[in-house]
Amino acid sequence: MQPLAAETITGYLGRLATANALTPRDLRLHVTDLAGLSPSHPNLERAAEWAERLGGLKPGHFEDDARKNSMYVRCQHHAWQPALCKRCGYTQDARTVCRRCAGGQQTSVQSRGGAVCNHHQRWHLDGADIDLTGFPEFAHAERCLSGTLWKRGIGLTTGELQLAASLIRYWATDEQLEGRIVDRMKMIGIDSIDADSVLLAAYPEIVRLTTILTDLSFASYLLSARFSLAEQVWALEAAVVTVMHGRTTPRLHQVAERIVARGKIAVEAAFGMRQNANNKRPATLEKALVASSQRHRSCLLRHLSTVRIQILPYEPGIAVPRSRVLDRRRPLPDLVVAEA
Image (cartoon, helix red, strand yellow):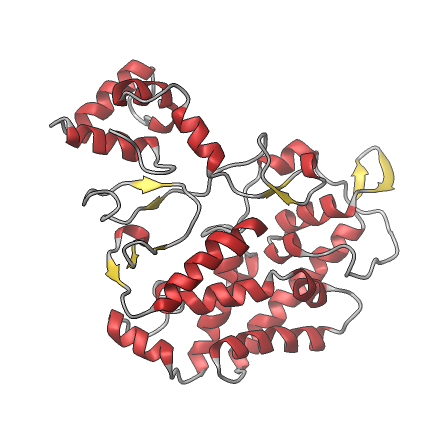
């Protein structure tokens, strides 16, 4: 039986068991024993060799598949610019796949893409199976996430979509929803926008806003020391209300101000990062921005253009972590979002 594109080993073994009239538990225990995994906490993703043997796949199938679906990363091997790196690339977090693509079975994949199956027009995130017929904006958003945003290193859990979703959610708390999004919510069966429903209710708007926020010119303007905080907060609010066809709200202004202020602090910290703990020479700015984005949990720093931001006078600060340390870390949602 052939796996789906970038299907997880755990998901594939579950489908393989069903196809051979076994229970997933029986096959899991068998593979755990063959691969010498811990019986109490077996990680089947480490049993690729045995999964390939049992499924009749060519050796190295899962490794090759993961490489084909690896995310764009910023690492030392490509001067800290978004690129497909064979050494540092990784697949995004596993997500449930469209059940129609999996023949009615439930499995998970780590392939390029998001929450929508454009082939069957279904929403499949977290095991859901929601018909999106009549809402072509979801298909457009999925193509944007799989194309433009993917090449910027953006996936479902890298933080940028969560940032845009939070801005829209807080805007919606004080604003009367109207237009296309209201029709969509009624058809899908969503009463209000909250932390659990915002991604489904406003997926097209979230992707569109993420595209704006991570544009090199916009992100660089938003966090540059050249402009005032008030101007930059206004620009962030304007991006949200333009996408949502509304007007700014007090709650949106408050959250936007926190996002911009924290981002500017992170940029200033990046300007002062040293090459290492033993000298005071400035670190490469591109590397320092990646390090500061991780340290301060500010995802927009990964999308700044060092050509467009004003370079502040260098004052030695903390040392930038080693490149291999930065390469191992995975993007996390903004700390502002986590606190809000």
